[in-house]
Structure formats: structure tokens, C-alpha cells
Image (cartoon, rainbow, N blue to C red; front, side, top):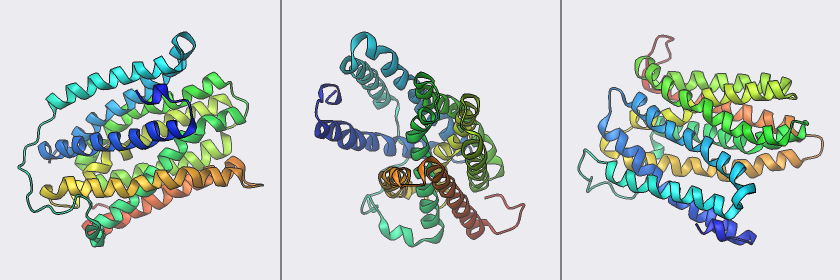
Length: 309
């Protein structure tokens, strides 16, 4: 609501950037941890299904702003989103339940010492790389589309296409992850994302059909990282430490979005680089993330091709 009455840059920064980011993280981490309390054998599928709500919001909220702003103005369009969010938050307060008692010996909520554990530390690093790439792609794909001459109205819909494709992309891979290994699926889908970035987006994404196809393909395969990241963390820690470990991992990975988007902007503004350099940077982050997931798989389960981990 503060965002809807903001009129200066510092007000937008404080209301949406600081307060919005803080409140979102406070809602996100306990909700994810609660799912991990109830599901172990089918944890990947359950988490993926729950995370489809994020994609649904990613479709609805941009379209609300896009279509209601000309009719009722930007402030009231934001208030509509605020009222919807308030209703969802109230409902979630009644629906969320924990199964395990509080861990009285949990210690600090951010456990940096845990990063010394090779599997957990590399998992956190992998999530750092992948989430950085996801945020950069979603942030700059609209600007890229407009830059290559695509109709601005269609360009702004690309983020909605990414989120729409992400709905099955978050749910379906969870089923295969429970059967064939969470880290196996994460490494495979991250590699596929890097392949689409270096081929479809970098080489062919200068027309409306190609960039739309990329948005759908990328949305589906990148959704896996959002749905499976929490269960990958759960796999390399004790269940009683899951809340603390997931909070630490996502706190570390949030710096990826904080630093990655300005870094991508600096690459974009560098003379002689432009969007091909930015796209290559995103693809390189995905390659680094897939390698990190493979390293965790090797440490935890072995290096054989048939290892399920």
C-alpha cells in the first residue's frame, strides 16, 4: 500500500525494494519450511505444486498493472494487488501448520558455519548462480524484446509467458526428482536452460516468434530450480535444521539478485557489448550452477551415471 502512494525515487526504493523484499522473505522462508515438515518421500512433488502459486501470481499481477492502470490509474492498480495479497496472506495464516516442535538448540537463524559442509555449501552456491540467472532473465527480457523492435505490448507479456510456462515447470519435474534424484534433475534442467539461452535467445531471439518461444521454453525449464531448490537443501541437512538451513541458503542467494541485476546492467551499458554480452553472462551463470549441482551429486552419491541423488 505504501508503494501505491509513493511519488519519489527514495519512496519507491523503501516501500517496494526494502519493505517489499523484507516482508516477502519473512513470508517465503517459513512457508517453504512448513512443507518440508510434512513431506519427505514426495517432498519434491509437494514443493513444486505449492510453488505453482508463485507463477500464478507472476501471470496475474503484471496483467493487472498493464490493463487496470489505463482505467483506474497506477496507484489503484497497485492497491488492487495489495488487497488480493492481503486476502491470500490471511488465508495462509490459517492453513499453515508445522509438524515438528521448535528446535530449542537451533542457535542463530543464519548459520554461516554450516557453509563449511561441502554438500550444503555447494548447494547454496548452485542456488546462488541459478537464482541470479533467473532474476536477470526475467528483468531484462522485456527490454531486449523492445530493443530488437518487438511491439512493446507483446514485450511486456513475455514475463507473463515465462510465469505461465513455469506452472507445469515447477510441478512436473518434482515427480521425476523424487524418482531419479533431486540433484540429477536440477543439474539436467539447468543445463537445458543454458542450452536454450545460448541457442534460441542469443542466436535466434531477434524476432517475435523466437523470443516468445524462448520465453515459454525458459519458463518451463527454469521453473524447476524454483520448485526443487528447497528440497535440495532439505536433502543435505537434518530435518530439524531445515528452517535454519533454508533461510541461510536463500539469504545468501538473495545477494545474487542484488548484485546480479546491476552487474548485468553494467555489461549491457559497456561499449561494444550490449545484449549479447548480457545473454552470455546469464548462460554462464546457468553453466556454473549446473556444475555446482553435479559436484554435490558426486560428493553425496558418487560419480556414476546411474547414481540417484
